[in-house]
Image 1 (cartoon, rainbow, N blue to C red):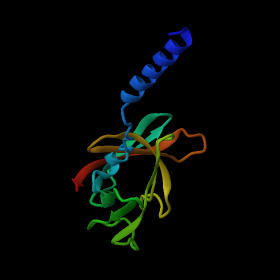
Image 2 (cartoon, helix red, strand yellow):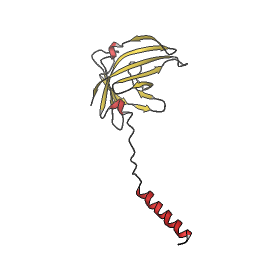
Image 3 (cartoon, rainbow, N blue to C red):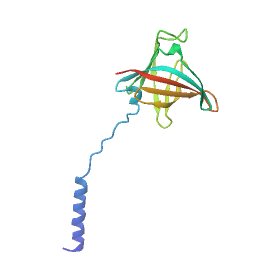
Image 4 (tube, rainbow, N blue to C red):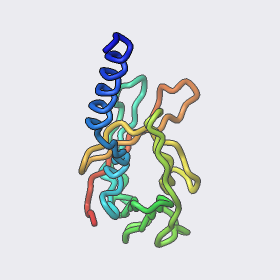
Length: 159
């Protein structure tokens, strides 16, 4: 056998070995948002709010009229979000419930939702902490980005 034939046989064997040893790649779906929703839905309750100035906590208080409200994140493809008012209401014309959508931007850690105590429009909240049963959001209310509210939630139900 000449040198060229041996090289072709070695290259062919290498190709057969390489093609026989590959593993099928299966993409894993992104599951971080399941911390908000669980498998079907998660219900969160607001526990308290902190006011900050220059990164330091200046006040900590409950918003009693909102503490019995339910904030429900659904794991549906359209990302439904529901707020159900409890027996304590914050505003005279407050609806018993409202349904909207939620969105999360991983690059900026921004959760966009309606929190009726702040606005009837969607606002971008920075996710400061998120695990299986605790959620902390922050929203800045000055132009310089030095004053904020941090809103603390705890898990109350998961389906």
